[in-house]
Image (cartoon, rainbow, N blue to C red):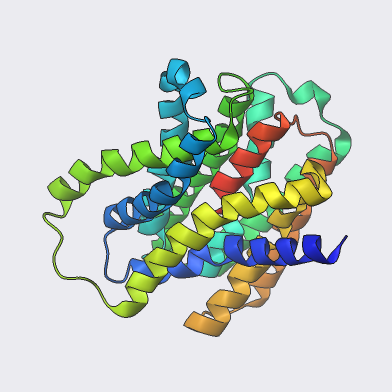
Length: 304
């Protein structure tokens, strides 16, 4: 791997590993809906001009229904549930649970009749990953927080379903156009949601919250998407997706160093098992979306 590729890899790993920390900080003063609105609006303002300049929006107009579905399952619903969950769960636990997305992808493949392509390695990975999730939920999460775990479970399913939409109804369409449009639609939808649920925004929150929101929109969403394309150009799509195995480690370290979140034995055990299971699922022949679809799907889910 070249020096440029290694720099891109490490930068993207941090950009995709710190959202859970930033969300935890932001929901101290913002509602989950306000956070989604602010984050998507910032990212959309950056990506939409780029998408328009590249002519990546017009091809989507005839597929607007599926674009709306994608926006709902990948952004609008998952991001608000993540905010809700992180009012009760440590950011590191949330990041580790999100790492189970490939396991949910395997379940979706099975449910849609595509599991016959899977090797025994993938099934072994599913078993290992489920044990890892069980270790986290059963031994590292308080019973009162199981509702938050369920919310993260919905997020995981949504993140796994998004690439399936990209692989079929939105197959072959420009990735940056899809992401920019989905972010824009979500921001517009959340304007009335916030006005109804939270009222007219009051004074600006504290500086740490403002910077967390800006970082989520600029670094973890808009910049991460562009960094991913640069990394794919350097190392190819298959090697680029291995970045997802670095994200949970960054989430755990960031939560421990910045928020003093405890790192228990079961946190480490769960991390090792979930990441190993996800790796085996991918190695074992999980049905892959086209390159463009996989890139967009990985970006949306890994940005949390």
